[in-house]
Image (cartoon, rainbow, N blue to C red):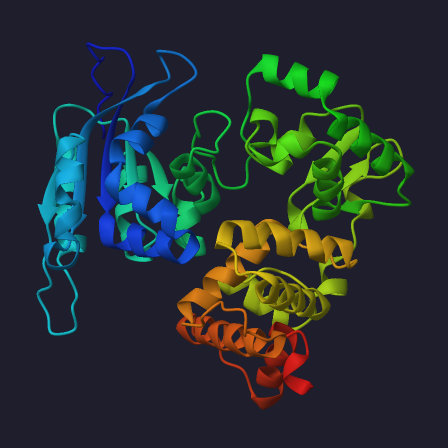
Length: 411
């Protein structure tokens, strides 16, 4: 039986941070190279942002700050981390395939911290590597809070085992200095709460609120969340920074009140509670029947229709042809284009596709066509299915390809 943690002698949550440098850095490079550079060269900035709280009681004190990196590849960044107060553990490659010793060193140090006399209350693990799922389970079993900092796609089981997840876009916002307030970890499936004063300001002053109220109340049924977000941003561009201090669209729209309801199911929906309810949302089977539903449920591939995937590739190719932008800006542009085209998708869905294209090794250049984007993405989806041990017959495989490619492989 675990004994109660001893009282702390200083205010703040006693925390420990373990950073898988190689994993986070490569993940950020695929999303935003400038953010990756800031992560590697200014760790003090984002560590302080994560340690900040709403008050002295909720602020974190990182008693342990460890960084694990491969010195053969990333030795030039070592000094930045030691100067920021991190203990840097060199993890060189030990095999011919280049596999480093990060995993075993990180796990051993984390278990030492878990069993130590200090009584760490919250463990931060900066890595999207699902191999650490068992470590998160051990933290949870010992009744410790766990927070995962993700820079890239995260396995469903790994995400759900953690108490909180700092998503890629939130972490990039910290690194790029675009967060409206210190980013706090958000529990999977929940919405972050903002200070009461911020809520009052958003309700009273934001033109985005007024536009959303008018739009949703006049809608003939529940409205796709991406479409509502697009209307709010058009009415109030300042919300692009951090949704008025709420961090996410779902949190922001949930705090409007006035009978406006929001649910994150099926990609997110907003409705007028005086006329509709959760039961009025379209059935999931209407959107993604059969084998597609298996893929989205097991692999975390966005639950979009073939038409939505097709629009993503077409919008992406058009934007890249105009002027290749960084992935953060490109995801926003493609999201807006899809909404305008009548095939609304969330920005998270677009970011997931961009990450998949990056993992597939597809270069996002001005010469990329929608068909080429569809082919690379479909191959990535098929690889996810293979890793997840999903077995399909020939007809089902064809259905997956047509769905994931948006039908572009047939044209």
